[in-house]
Length: 154
Image (tube, rainbow, N blue to C red; front, side, top):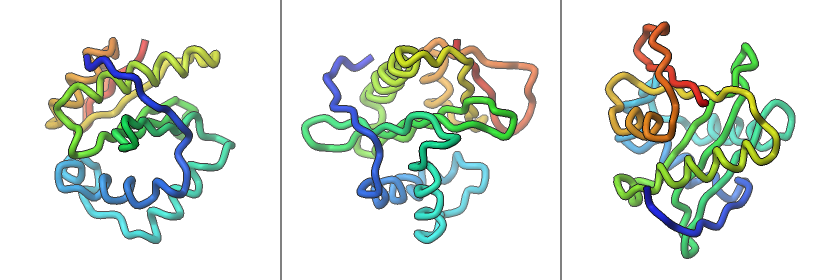
């Protein structure tokens, strides 16, 4: 895991273009359920909802030397399950930042008293993300069978 001193901050509307560009990146699109690019209007509505304090848990940006490396957030699914999402900048992928950011985020979530299980859903062919969650002590829930693998922490 990469050892680094991140600057951590809350996501704001100023992150909108980064988030949209990264979400619509071809490497990300192929691992999405919809596998379609998101329109800017749809993205703005989505981000506005995520920035509201009700129903959403931390949504943080991780920076190093003034560059945003990645974003991590927790959302409540319809069954009140906490679902984690992590998005790393295309220029920082494959360098160990994902594991370092995920580890930092999980420590933060636990430090604020959130002890509920956290779930991650990963497309079956997204091997790097599966490795990331496994290496971060997420366990695969093999009872779920679909085009997505389900992982749970702790």
